[in-house]
Length: 120
Image (tube, rainbow, N blue to C red):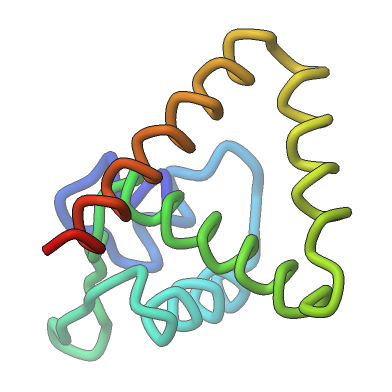
């Protein structure tokens, strides 16, 4: 994805050439095809090959992946989601106290948004 974000458009061959480590053409082709099927890359046919471009920004994709991960964790623990949330808070506070403050701010903002929607 990094190469797709850096280049306007990129073919499998160009991606192979730009990679810092040697990776088989078929591996890159399969990976790019999977990213296309998941909606992360767009593509168009040029001659016999596809040319790919990022379908979304890095931020949009990171947000979507994180949301999917959290949703998956909460679904697995649907009966008892508190341990998942507790682990998230612990991980955030262990990493950076400011992140914990950010998390608290986000929770307050979400509560305000939900309250406004409720009062409409």
